[in-house]
Image 1: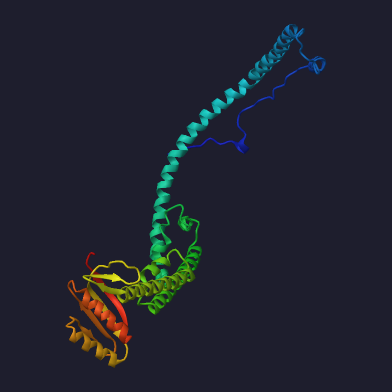
Image 2: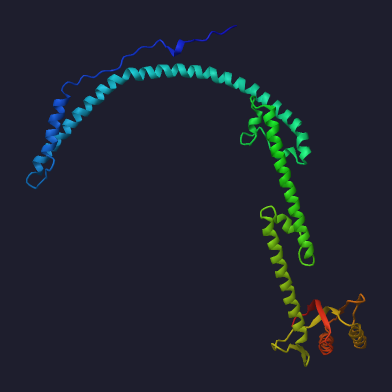
Length: 338
């Protein structure tokens, strides 16, 4: 059944009205009288002698103002009442029309959403190959159905495929360049950490690339390496010094520099480097003193000493090393309590 709508030519609604007119012939005379009255009290000062009479004057002035205000409100309400009634009647008609229009809108929206969903699936299908061409994932586009998505407008009926493909190519190309730059930065970090592989691992710095620039990460690697080298060097110097300063006093061992009674060394790992003759003499010393040890390698010899409550042998070995000026590195050590 065809539904005939109400039509008006040029919005010519069947409504007529006349502008309200208010005749106030005595306004000029009243304004003149009020002005003169105000001027009379322009510089007036209330005094102790006059203030009682002044209260009567104030009352008269307030009554005059109230009379004017009352008349103004009465006339204004009388004039605007027809307009108010008109507004209410038209508002009722507008709401009735809106109710039907809203129901139709919901139905239209349902089919528009179906069209957008179909276009969304077609976009994923057609642009999937485009994304692969650039070596990136189409998932980088996000959910186009989200209104906050940069490319949500692709789902609009009026958005052409030519525009969609052009913008998609631009997006995928940019993402591919970003991915390439990121991979190059990762490789630079890996190469840098490989230079310091004895002290630095690459994993934390690769993660750091997510929130810092490449120059910042490289600078951090250099600083961390420098710190670790200095820290290791200081630890080694402290260990060497502790062994070199160890002296026996009765049944105790004392740091010759500080006078502190030190704990007993029960295990120490040392790596010796130097001329083979000195190493040979060292091994003879170890054999003569019945030191439990293990020799590893030929050119660089690592000797590990393990004792149980036999700090004297370690102290003796320390003295021998100082006399022979053998280069060594403390690998590890264990002590019992004092």
